Image (tube, rainbow, N blue to C red):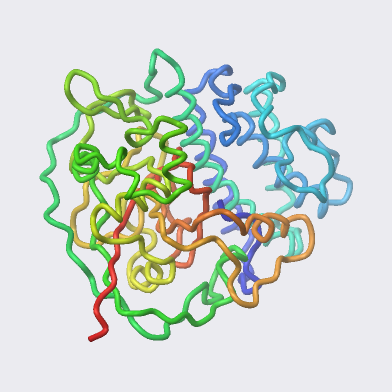
Length: 426
């Protein structure tokens, strides 16, 4: 996911406002972790996912390292062994525990990680009124960073619980009222010609969202909603996972090699499709957006549907007029999932939308110097951009310019599909 570099135009934030935001962000992480046992929070289900306990400690390490250690004279680390355990990718911060072995960290315990968080929270809030502006910007950055990890926290726990043969529910299932199927996809003619793309410099952004620049768009249309589970079932029934003509070469090799026949967490049981979620295994809602599909699957579906995936520039141009804080996004701990579309085009929330754009730097991009500038530039290869946020994205975190990115085979995030098509220039 995008990481760790603030916009140079970030405005000064009053200490009281920043303290309130810090408390809210940190409190949501604790709320998400509240139902977990120590074992739940320790296990790592795959190399792409991290244990819940690690997410909680890593985000704390960020504040302790880049704010308290570097900007509060006399601050002593809570535990000098923790930087090795909870550094992620920062080469400038020295050696670290291997990512694929994070599930071996049985100690510190979950309670000890909570105590680490409390220690750092107290120290940071005491220091906050006297911190220089550069340190306050790092606090703001750390809050955005922790929100990213809150989404990963949710999706990593979902993947972990799906690996348990008991298929436990993290949250008590709630009754669902039937929802009418959305009508046929409508098409919104997109902007054509030269458009402005990227963050406009107002407020916070990650460095990969800029510089703002011009892009040339051809005539096109973009769907007014994302693809539903019912439409994906039609793709399956029509042999979509068995027809090599629909797939990119690497995608077809992935389908055959991994035995892929449906979105992640789907299973046929008792004559119908079911999905596993944070509320356990339940029947699939045919009206809801399909999710947990890879770029390969998204591209194959688009080909089957006689369409294509939008470019990230087409998507941003269409979404810019919509409320980035609207839609179905994360407001608190609970059994979140994508919901059926209603009320017109929704570009934010429910599912991250795959685009056909490779994750590459914009013209004029330069990575910021120092440790917090390491991530984005060095990951700009082999991945594709997703836009819009999901039901697991903390509300207020997303922007029209926000660029998420994953490898084309990955699908444990809440990822979905919005179609696009070319229009005749005549």
